[in-house]
Image 1 (cartoon, one colour):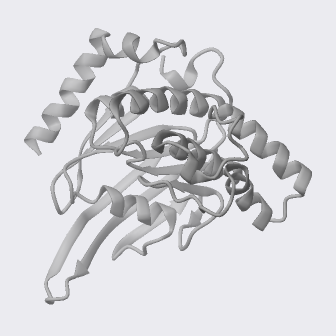
Image 2 (cartoon, rainbow, N blue to C red; image 1 turned 60 degrees about the vertical axis):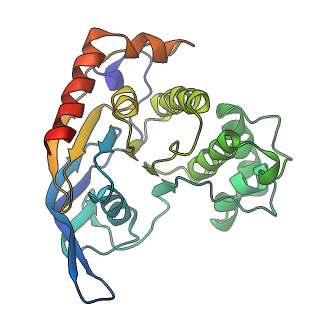
Length: 270
């Protein structure tokens, strides 16, 4: 039984599949050299699945994320959300970056409300949504604070709440915990797993940490060095509770260690 099918898991939110169909990308440097970033890649991510992507720097992980976000038109192939071609950004797909991109002149609550405000959501409704999300990420007492008054981990929580306020069906995350200390990172991993289990969005999560990928993902993709291609597609069939020691419990399980070692070996061999 996978984590997505555990008792108490919410219904899947992202009901449409994310699809890459022969997506490849190259670019030309200022010196005129052609760099092949991603080899033609075909991939289907079912709605509600949490997919983690690992691989060496420069292997094309972020390139694929930018294609899925609609920020980058691939050199070859097509990306789709369900039957809809991805040709630009959409509120259906939210992006969480490695560095929090909060507006410093707005309060934390104002940052969370900003997306719904631009989309015409009424003030009472967006305030209600913001308060719910701030509570979900543990910032209910910091709604009136400015981003610079928060720690790095708290800023990242606020960024996640801001993305979720638009009620995206897909959340694309580019090493969101990479710059955080180990304790904050572990805490946010557990929080993210709890939130995703509750809301059931599709998640495409980039990381350099094999342990993080196996802990969070329903599925782990390993990419090779440039031109990037998927060399391992590993399902993570680990059921877990959501208690305070969920990380320690999972990461010491023999099944977890076996999957972690297979993923690490694939990276070494790629």
